[in-house]
Amino acid sequence: MTAVIAAKNLKKTFGSLTAVEDISFTVTKGECFGLLGPNGAGKTTTIRMLYGFSPLTAGSLELFSMPFSENLRAIKLRIGVCQQENNLDTDLTVNENLMVFSRYFDLPRETARRRARELLEFFALDHRTEAKTAELSGGMQRRLMVARSLINQPDLLILDEPTTGLDPQSRQQVWSRLEELKSGGLTLLLTTHYMEEANRLCDRLVIMDHGKVLVEGKPADLIRRHAGREVLEIVQPDGRMREFITRQGHQFEDLGHRLLIYSQSCEELFTDLGKKFGDANCLLRMGTLEDVFLRLTGRDLRE
Image 1 (cartoon, rainbow, N blue to C red):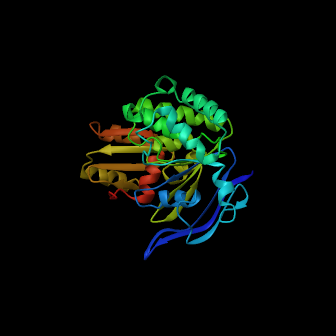
Image 2 (image 1 turned 135 degrees about the vertical axis):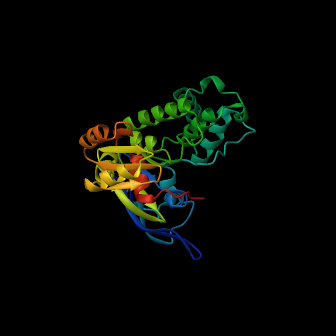
Image 3 (image 1 turned 90 degrees about the horizontal axis):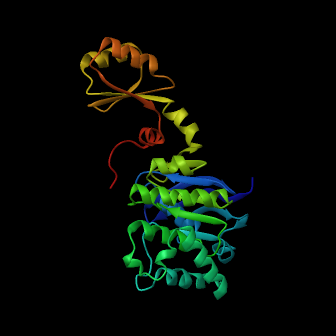
């Protein structure tokens, strides 16, 4: 498969602080690749290096099989970036935001008009073409941000937490549009804090922490490897229940008010607990990417 991104031993320091330390990954044409991690893990710093906003401290980077530092202008013409912060121009209308942005890519005026019209229709914003961006809902503004990042018909779309703060309906709409773009052959690089988003959109992903890659793989493979197919949750367990589970040889995560047991199959234990502790508050569910994330990066708050 053709590598759209080939990052090798990337490192980024700010004085004595190492934000990204020796990470490597590849992104192939037509896939969605995710960068996951807690706040401060190095995700945004990594993608800022990928689109030239922040220079590498060390390592090598190729995009579209071209060395990054030697082909910066050619590469930038082929990528689109939807940043985490909303930086739409509030003095301009929805359509004007796209038209002004198209000038960065030297698009002919008629081409820019056609692209703007197509994108606004694609993102269900064509009925608000002449509205000022301040008049739009949060979901509409995020859709406009994504639309703007596509004005140059990029070969790679970089999305930094594209659905943060959106309501479920708006988030689902953005996901649907991104899936359509991916099915059309567009390569996506995504950072997100939403595990459901990563599981739905990403073909492969890495989980980072403290500037390093902890694991890499397909979401389903990571769940099977680090959480198990099933998770048994026991709410408000007493001493007898903890002793029983320990005696049975099961490994569990003790959160105090809740026990989490990870396994390829918890059904037999679930049945045994029901027989022995009839009033036990137990929940048997499938393992998730969030289980993997929390097991690998911990449950402490990151500020």
